[in-house]
Image (tube, rainbow, N blue to C red; front, side, top):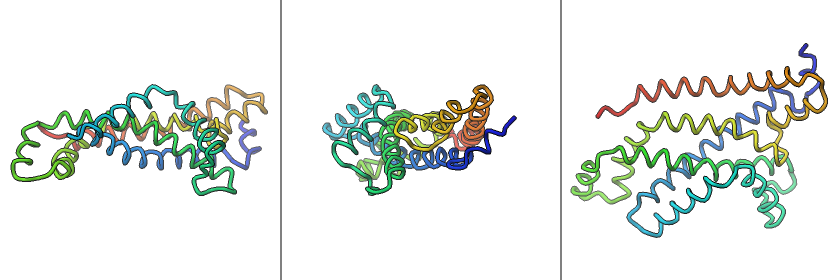
Length: 225
């Protein structure tokens, strides 16, 4: 019944899901860094930074991810010559361009999750920190963000699960992840339902433990008010 799995060695099913995992992990790290910076901009006392953060989030969240991913390939790579340090390696270049698109898109949602956590921190704590001479950056880094992160583990878990599923869009520019292999299998094999079930199970294996672990962690680290 599962003979079709052994026909594909490059990439194999496990290899394709390994690419999906790499896309998820690297994109999650990049999105967390960029999203945190955007959240800091959105609560910044500098109007220009607030305006940039607000405009970025509102624009990027309303652009389909497929458009962003395709733009990284057709726009950045083909028109502007952006190769992400992989001029001669087509697969590596597309992988890195897909990472760039995923980070740019997901960071907008990470930003809003973190900003909601910042809003849960009592204003009095920030005022007390400023009263003892801390700068805005110090207040944010030492007082506000540590509490904000603890209160938004749950929402960030949802963003991470969505990111895992969004990696399938990378197939649009030829990244050899799970969705691209599934498409190839469906085109060449007559077992559409079985192939779909195998890949659906693979994504459940990736996302379900993530939700359970981060949900437990969210309750464990919740800030007691």
